[in-house]
Image: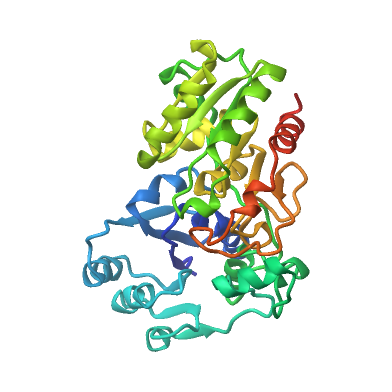
Length: 367
């Protein structure tokens, strides 16, 4: 019997992509002889190099139409497609690609394009954006209905969304830790390219966050924490960030002023693959809730994360409950609000002090 050709329509964002890896690994367990192809935005294609759950990658550019992608899928003659995003477009792509069996969540405007629709899982928790009125009521000490339902649901984490989809194909829904594979030669090339002393203990610092300022621990506190950790541990710092974080990391670099050999600012200088290697090289990553946070955990690096507007119970790094990660929250009654900007006084992040973060980093790094 010919092994099945399976297409996985991947998700569009870095952190979400990492959270899909447990489902992909479970699919590999279920279909060990299948040829599994991942359809992914080109910006994420290199994430899947060496991944044991994926045999090949098809990528598409932002400007490519549904029809062009569909025609490319037809040429591959897939037997089955599992559609991970909830968008109508992703379902339309595999329909136009004439994949005979098409499986995905039963979401609006896409049922027609799927041959098997999967109902929402029982433990799913939606990210409810709080209104300003709700926030003010919580801060005053009032109550809202189900203010933090995710904290009472051990299966709330978003990686279960993808495992549930995979289970529709017979895969084991039990959670696994997200996993990305980075070979040692990749780490060594990265070390040589940026002159990273192999005898030095390197810690990572990622102070940006694309979603909005409500996810960012104050920059002054990042700087104060990094200075204190440097004083206590005599470590080196690798600064991470995207193209929009250049001014932010320049401010951190200027404020830290360590010996030149003890700081490397990689903001905007790495490919995605090099980012994976650099994060693997770090002893620990101090970061906001971002895509690199998920990548670091998936390559085996502990993370320390101040959480404010978002919820570690829903989208935290690694396998929920992993002791090596430190996911820090204040007692702000309005968190998580899932807003881009705080409409009041940013108490969720301001309630996380520097010493608490310093202690977590030193413990995670075993320094």
